[in-house]
Length: 268
Image (cartoon, rainbow, N blue to C red):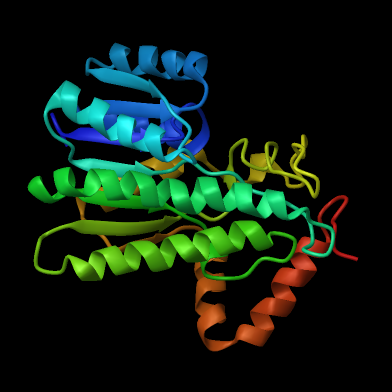
């Protein structure tokens, strides 16, 4: 990855930040994007300290023009784009019965449409470089999670979209990978949207028992270098994917019971 140009969305914290730093440690040039410019600048300082170049772009991936400008900034600065990591995402926690539909639209706009916009505008440049598209997804893209209807829908949609992009470009040496980390210690649950669109505030899970963002970033880096098509992490995550294929009723009961036991679960 030395001197490759890598663009990471949602790079101000969590998996995005850790992934940007991991690629930078291998000598890649970084383009990092997020809504918070102040946080991006802090990440950029860490990347610069690793001895490589970095560009920060304030962008909301739910905005088509922001995504177009983001790709243009990367190419105008470095002359090429080798890896696009669609990481920006938000979650939600509420039953469909209680959910304001604007929340579902917001989740789809960021998680799905953000991936569509960035991939669409980056594709010509990635094809020139025989590059990589990475979608940071979730086990929720394989298994429908109760009280996460919008989140699961967005990840299922991401899977279908990126798998189609891969198939459309067979023979053109374009690498497309879906990375599903499983539960990871990050701020995604703290910023998850509640039924009315407000931030959840506190994570319903024990974050210290989860895989760290740095561990996930290392797996994503290695899988990108090896040009894998899929990456499913954690024993629990791999088991969920397997059971969803062969024992769907069993995994539905298991997932329901697990989510129901969360503190203040919206499941009755």
